[in-house]
Length: 346
Image (tube, rainbow, N blue to C red; front, side, top):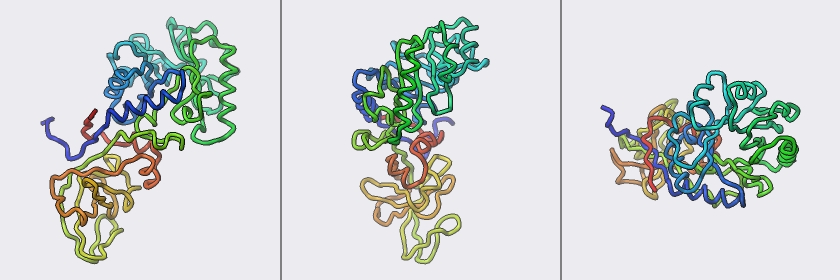
């Protein structure tokens, strides 16, 4: 019974994804532009993302774990894959067998990689985010490694703060001590800081998928993910009656509503309660009452033709949806649930 069509789908705009990558690549000047595809392509489907961006010319992809790397095999011809979390002892069999490079993050990982025979790798340097990465004072452990990309990660690239320049200088200082082929620092927000941060390789994630990390990207980044749901029921709520849990909304007048087959289990979070909107064509359908696990009520008064089985689109422009819901753009993307059928259009 696997061919039962679900009552909600995630429409994904492949042309917008590719256009976003082209814009980000242009901002990096002569730097190669990669793509972070961790968390299953930020929730949109990593295999489809890799296929589309590889066809567009992207040659560098980054996953988080070896489980994610294995799920991407076989890779398109001519592309490389880096695994950001490096190598645990449990990862060594996969790391030895798969055509991907670990991003080594600690002296222990360096020793583990070297003991297994080494080979081409990437290395993360901690220049101030104090998350993953080898401290500058420990770079002596890197001697003899075949380092493809020496990288670091900006902590505050979405803000104009002195730490950005300090981290850039920190990476450049380490680069003078450690042989490497390429240097990389900028994520989506870092790309918007200017070409001084691009170095040899940029590593966008959020902006590929429709997120706007800084004001410089506004108007250039296109929405990629469009959640859609069917109306399960249309009904009239009489004046004075309430809708949903805890009766947080009551009708001031007789109101036509539609109940949508979608909810917070699908990533349409409770923060949208009373704030979100769906659309039937160009007609706005405001959310009424609380979002529940599987259902959302919307005001359908302005859409008299909307009835059971009709499809509507949830407003999910990421900057606007983030402001409405209080969730970060990253959370909104990666929280889109597995119950969606993901449908790509080009």
